[in-house]
Image (cartoon, rainbow, N blue to C red; front, side):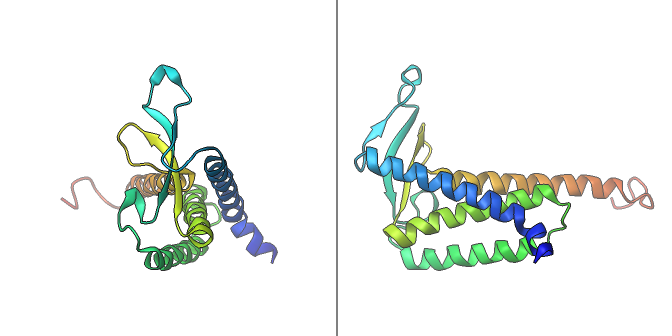
Amino acid sequence: MKKFLKHNGLLFLIAAAVIVADQISKTLVRQNLALGEAWAPIPAIGDFLRFLYWQNRGAAFGTLQNAGSILAVVRIAIAIFIIVFYQKAEIRDTLMKVALSMMFGGALGNLVDQFSLGFVTDFIAVGRFPIFNIADSSVTIGVGLMLLDMLIKEKNGSKADPEEKPGENA
């Protein structure tokens, strides 16, 4: 049990923090804004950054509208895949573990909405970019960190092979 907690502690900690922040922010939006209502908190930038209550019944960026049960199955499959992949991560592979934890927390945050409300609450509107939420942001940042981790490993891996001579694989 101690080994399990040591290996998965970061997963549970980060995922829980993402879910809590996501659900609190969504609840505040639903309690304080009517559907379609916007609030721009920084007058100096006008409507560029605003909170706009929207109900997303589809996937990311409003695609696949009204495909709720299919999307729920896909989100569950992704969450399971993340857990399995996380188990294969080395204990010292912190960046990859943080990335997976953020993606897991984001996936679960949107699943909570999907199962409890039948839609995902979106509310962050920046310019003309599609409306999103904290869970979506967490998934996006997690994917970015995963790509960064892969690039770092790729770069370090090519330096780690002293047998390979420059131009040998060209």
